[in-house]
Amino acid sequence: MDNIGNFNSSSQTNLPAVTGTSTASNGVHGVTSSNKDSAVFAEHTGQGIAVFASGAGAGVVGQSTSGPGVHGKTSSNKDSAVFAEHTGQGIGVFGTSAKGFAGFFQGNVHVTGSHTVDVDILLTGADCAEQFDVADSQKFEAGSVMVINDTGALELSRLPYDRKVAGVISGAGDFRPGIVLDKRQTQSNRMPIALLGKVYCKIDAQYSPVGVGDLLTTSPAPGHAMKVDDPLKAFGAVIGKALRPLRSGQELVPILIALQ
Image 1 (cartoon, rainbow, N blue to C red):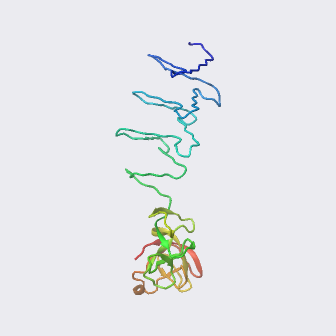
Image 2: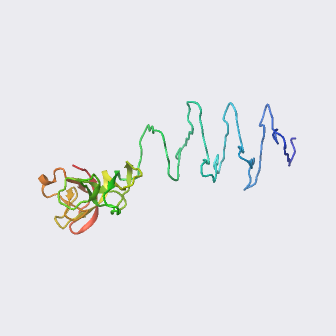
Image 3: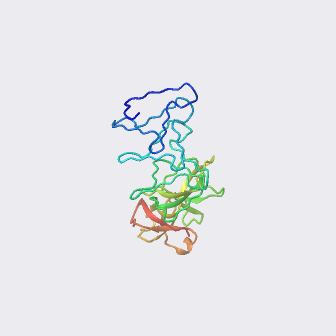
């Protein structure tokens, strides 16, 4: 069968329509120069498996010089485009790259187990935030200073040197949270509060000009911080340090969160 150009076969029994057997080479070998068709094409019109491979070595090997080595695609609402299962002690999916990323995901990733990282975790976000219940059903603006009320929920700060301060709503300006803790679905309105790192904060400089490195606390202006002028009053009410100056007016200013 070395020089057969076209070969069609069908089976109405339990036997395979096409069988390839070899003791020294490929059992089935497909070659094409088409820009749109496959060298080997398999189609299953029922509920079974289109291609099944089994061997003592690799079950399936995909290799390409200009496209994906293996490409999986599905429109199913419950199944994966690519599914890997290891029934022993090994790794379900293993990726390696000489120069690029060993793995890349465009979209959300859900992991049910733990993470083990041998080197560094690199995050593009600027702060570590945690979600809190917010007393009001409205969405407060990012950068607002929030305090804890008597029910344990958060509301806008309205008093100077308020020791109930919890932090600043994350996400203002060009800063985004790198980590969001306690993110879950509840009946309450929840928002991420920056607890550590850099965040844009609403600052009111009408009480005193703010310089770089100045400590900040809550102000009489709702949701705004101001410069600490009385260190004794500020004990337990410090939000953080200003990273840029603000001589007058109200403005979003980047700060370094340092609750104390």
